Amino acid sequence: MDFFAQYDAVLTDAEKALVAKARDFCAGEFARELQRSFAEGVPFPESWFARWAELGMFGLQARPEHGGFGASYMCKIRVAQEMAQVGFAAAFCMNHHQGSATRVSKEGSERQRGELLADLLAGRTLSTIAMTEPQGGSDVAAISTTATPTRGGWLINGSKAWLTNGLMVDCLMLLARTEGGPGDGMTTYIVRFPRGDSDTVTREEILVPGARAFRIARITFRDHFVPEWAQFTAPGAALKAAMGVINAARVHVAAMCVASLHAALCEAVAYCETRVAFGKPLTAHQGLRWELAEVATRLEAANALVFKAALAIQTGGQPVTLAAQAKKFAVDTALWGLDQCVRAVGAAGASASLRLAMHQAEVRMAAYGDGTSEILLDRIGRGLAKDYPMRSEAS
Ligand SMILES: Cc1cc2nc3c(=O)[nH]c(=O)nc-3n(C[C@H](O)[C@H](O)[C@H](O)COP(=O)(O)OP(=O)(O)OC[C@H]3O[C@@H](n4cnc5c(N)ncnc54)[C@H](O)[C@@H]3O)c2cc1C
Image (cartoon, rainbow, N blue to C red; front, side, top):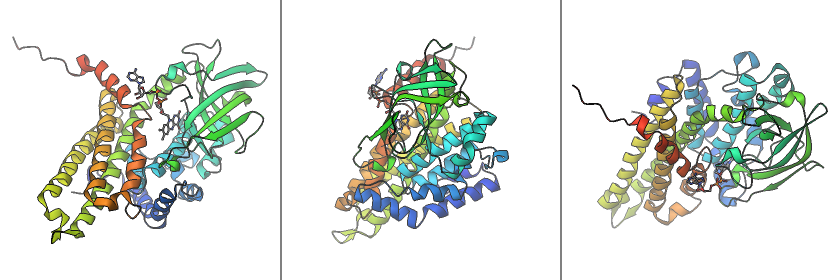
């Protein structure tokens, strides 16, 4: 059975066609350029965002009446998996922007859609979610960026760090503390700004060796004005809204991890089938074959868990524990499995001749966003008594 068959089985024919389109896009020059850029230590060319937009992929989940495909969650997963097989970072980055477009389409006001959506769908404006700050990301409630009411809008002050696509975004869905605001005091604002530095906005790269494809940056605002229409969530409701989508985000990242490991295992097996040592192919040596067999076994287990969680979300659930478990296990399995693959093929695994080193460097970054391993374990741990109750004995 094809590794992705169970996901594909729940897609419509139109969604299967979108997955096929994504597969065609990712094959060939795109895949080669990702690998070449990784080897040179530079981000892949920005022009690929425009080419992805030409396929309409930033509107994957936007409403059809807004020019999107209105695709399901499972379809979004499969499209990302197609890309994660050739480059985890590229899939992560494309998806981040697509997520903003989806939110504006589904949750934005008419004014916000009018101001922004066409540019987001076309990739002319690039956006990302901005929650993390230099002093920390896990404790989102502790953010210190502020939005202060002023005539006609707000003034934003503070720094956001670890922003995906941060070197090129010109829009953020930014979480800020609204002083004196109701609820949790947090509100999400659509914050637009020029790509170059200005009086009110500066940005600097956070250099992440091996993962420059994410174009990670820190962006600082000083009295940066946002107009009234740019308030995206109700005042005091932003944190709750963010937590409402976290399960889907966790499972989505987990699904990309299993796709990257699957691609890596296939590459390692293909290499070891033809590479000869001591008169026979590497896979004919039982010790090495067992190591790859172990990767295959854990990969299938991770994929089964991810699919179970994905299906729960696709059918309208909020599987808090399952989503945390899927991300934790998929990330751990992918990092361990990629290391095994890199090692199994010998020195070639560390070189740019194979895609393995790139997968290893990029998938490593999956361990941080949408909940670190400790935060996920904490989440799972808090649900233990509810999720794993002891059966009462029959009377
Ligand atoms: C590639 C990449 C892209 C990203 N993109 C974005 C983006 O677009 N937008 C955005 O807002 N953020 C983004 N992030 C940031 C990401 O969300 C944060 O890295 C994450 O939330 C963790 O925050 P931190 O790195 O500040 O770690 P910290 O919160 O400082 O934590 C440090 C360590 O302490 C542990 N820890 C913290 N609290 C606890 C606890 N209660 N119990 C046990 N251990 C704990 C953590 O698990 C971690 O190991 C990105 C990160 C990466 C790597």
